[in-house]
Length: 272
Ligand code: NAP
Image (cartoon, rainbow, N blue to C red; front, side, top):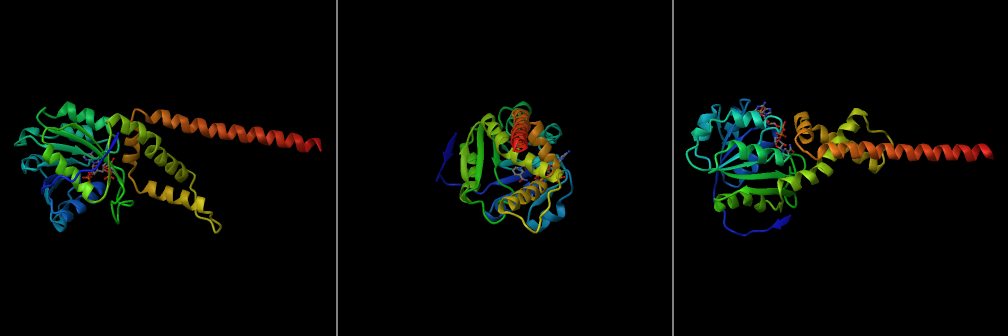
């Protein structure tokens, strides 16, 4: 794992966003602000929004791939990636490109991209550890994880990474496997607890403590993410099941300790 800080020069990029949902739109705003030229395609017709944002929207995948993008940035859901990649008419690409992704799991896209893409295409796997809520005002000091899986065109890769460096992100280079291990212990756990709190239907009370306010915030911020994202975090991270089991085990342990203590207390009280 290494923290990167680079001052090399960057150039204007033509970036094709594949999957123009919540997160694709969020990233696009900053890329446009920095002067990059954007193209987009998606399952849903986002042409009106793209028009307002100054982005060319392509309904046709072939035309999107022909649009001479320096970088194709995959922002589709984790669960749809395999289907989306299979549907790409890669013969429409004119020259080797950088293919980057932002999926919240990393081994799954890396494996699929290496399987599906021709060997001459560069692959950069990334995960911005923030979203439309946490990054709405600024990306400063927010973490950007990346793995340079297969890079020959250093200049394009570096220009792409500098989009995030320029915004003040903390750039963290690590392997896809290392990412997934840490993400299961941190991000996935956060999402699971948020979903559990939602199942419990926790509500604000007139006497909230600060701690309880934090739980309500966690529930609300978790529910802003799609269920597809949550399911994808679990299904496509090989470390996820272990963490879910750890959580269940810990909850059971806490319960057992409380019950033992209660039994002891009752016994003592009945003696007096
Ligand atoms: P999401 O529900 O994970 O993904 C929505 C995107 O996936 C939309 O572009 C949607 O296309 C596309 N999609 C879903 N099912 C599809 C299918 N069957 N075929 C083709 N496209 C399909 O929500 P998201 O928040 O926008 O996340 C997008 C990606 O960014 C995910 O991989 C996620 O892990 C990653 N990410 C998200 C965040 C975040 O805070 N939200 C942060 C870091 C990384 P349409 O819009 O055309 O329907």
